Length: 407
Image (cartoon, rainbow, N blue to C red):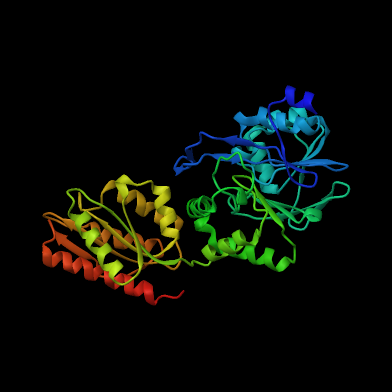
């Protein structure tokens, strides 16, 4: 064993009996999907299951292919892999497949029909595919793999792989976080970071699909399958009370959130900012938690997480060219795509000789499916003391609505 370690710098980690993490850590990733910030990096988790037949569940991003091969080689020659399970075809989980399949040319790929189509379009390879659907199983000998389709968690081709004898759910993107760590389990690091990144992933990746997610979670909960561990394909593994993350996903999928208000605004000459600060004061007077962010100075994917976690939104912008400032326009387009559930909102803003921003905000919020309290609050040029008091009352009104909402 010592000789093997001297030859190979890449170490695997046993996460359950005869199940090994053989993935890769991306310490430097800071942007994902071109817009989603990853302040803590990420990991690409791959799992090797040893039995009479050997299965590998998910690969890693292409540039990390040699690490995958190195960690597999610590246990077995890659040529001994019989089955490669692809839960999802996106390149951060499949990019190393061409290298892997060269090293394991006799391996068969198991995936959904959509995943097969996507892999063929991505890699143009002549691999042996077996397509599966929910309820299909394969035996490795003493262990059985069961497949569960999970479309839109987060692509149409997504599925889970369940290791029956280990009560282990290999969930690909679902229930994971973008975190790079030398630790492999949730309980080994600060769980505050875990929940922050869980919420951020849900808000930026899964939010538009809450109806489908709720249906899938109901299916899992009603299936009677015992789940003692959840091992996602990004971040840390849930080995202690993994149902906590299932429950949190259900909470978000049902549109539930804290009694909290997010004040999201942008400003040109600080008039709208002064209004926002007064509204924050009003919200606090009602006893409701509040967070304010100037969008042009904020990370949008972090703001999306705050939207997920807040029942109320107060959205404001200065007017330029009869519309909102650019950072606000981007935020409103995000909201229309994410379509957050069970939110209440109102709009505000300052303007010079002509207004327009408030109406633009209200229309966008309605298009996002958000309950909008009208009319919004507009101030010409800069709010005077009376105008600031009006802003305080505006904030209190929204906060009272949030306080009354138990849904």
